[in-house]
Image 1 (tube, helix red, strand yellow):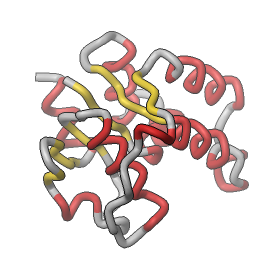
Image 2 (cartoon, rainbow, N blue to C red):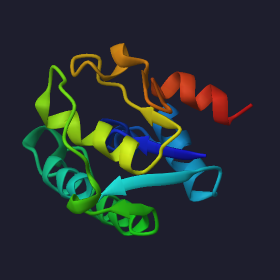
Image 3 (cartoon, rainbow, N blue to C red):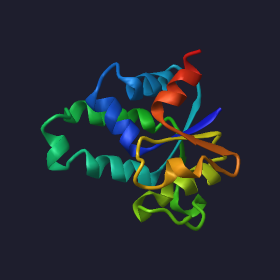
Image 4 (cartoon, rainbow, N blue to C red):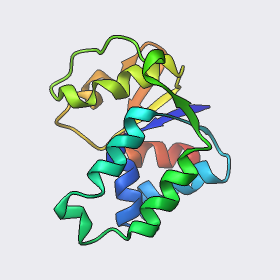
Length: 139
């Protein structure tokens, strides 16, 4: 099973240890699924972790550990990402491109504004919230 985790899910895992997003992240670390990411997403995670609202609550060492761990995921470079699909938030179109190019079974996001959750399916990829995905993998 291949999965794309929205950057907001990864940040949530760092913010709330033992929360739903952290359970998903730890499930990947224990090989319950393959994680698909990209150079674009790794850059976004680095950049977002430095935003003032996160800087006060995120420990740089935990962010660094996560980024190092993500180096063991399936990493797509820009050449593998197809033309973006239109969303309310154009900054999140790369997530759909990652899901398609990485042949992901699931795209997990908590962002209701971008329009990802409203899509429900993109090709073979099912789009769902962290809570729904967490329930699926912990059964």
